[in-house]
Image 1 (cartoon, chains in turn green, cyan):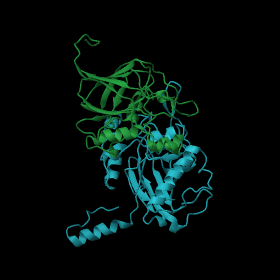
Image 2: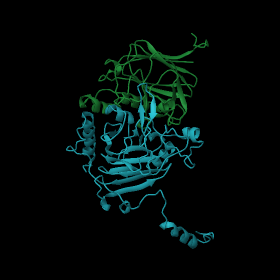
Image 3: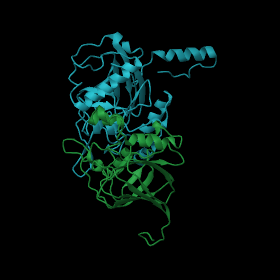
Image 4: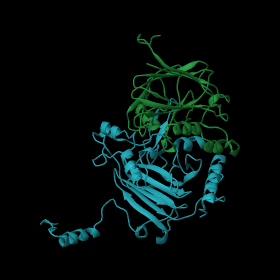
Length: 208
Length: 287
């Protein structure tokens, strides 16, 4: 295999992550993470941490302010809370991705859909579980990216998660600028259209 | 005007010199006790009874202040001269692991912009603060606050000890005094400086005429830790570091009850108040 610039690619990790599951992996500086929306319209909640100092982590506000746009697109640079580049979107087949919609939690699901959803699985529980594997915790929760999720803002300020614009097999590719810990929740949400009401697996490929 | 150097050659002289300074007033300072604050009136123009006053402070450009306030407190931020920017973080004072979540705040309320009637929601699906009055109308829940890197790029310096303090380090200092740290800094909201999002997703700083005296009043729905810095908005289009004093006044009042129109204004908000009530019932705060 070779990359877009013709240099050889070494696949370091290639995994199909089952629906609804958490995932965490360190990506070395210069390596690439490719995320494949295998069955289409599967939202993937994602936070990046500086693997050597997790107090430095992805910041949605810094990222959208720097590019003066709320949508993540090809070329978007994901910035940390210290204003440093963490990842760049080197390619994306899905036109844009969200970073203002946050992660679903059992507590916010209860507000959005009713108390009957309080015991449904949610992204924040996935993040907290993944954090627990590394001695991290709720203090490490912060803003996140929602790959393949569609959150428009209307002229009057109305905002919401609407039908996705992804499709089966579409992928997004990111290059790491620092040694990052990527923590992912393959979103289990079934009360809004972010997963087409049917959470599905995704593929995660780390390469150098 | 003092011409001669003060005599601080002995401990007694130094003590006298220090104590003589106690009568001075600075342009930006708290009023302690808050009951001595002058000119705090409610929205009807009635003076707040001194015994209800909890906090009164004026934060200058680049400054910061923080306070723990009880459930039911009303916090008023006033843009005294019309160019303040209150970078605001809020925590559950009893359990600061629970904190403001701006994504949930905009998503749950189906609204990107804050104003009267908005709730500032925690990451546990509860109401930290309710916005009960707003004469400004330009606020921001998307853009966060400055960090040192950004201010160094924009203003040439960004350190707290310099001329262009960044909000993030201000937050870190304030939070440390409450046992919290950089991991506890989450995306904040900004009062008095707004942004809009256009159809292509682009962010635009709102250009508003200066409104000296504009204010926002928020009601604490649980005991809260409030941390506020007064630094320029990150999308402020001006090249210079422009920000004017922010006055904070807080007094005791009642939290939102079922008979308040805000309680059931939206089904999402009502459930947020109910989840807040549940917490308070189980932890014994029924004020």
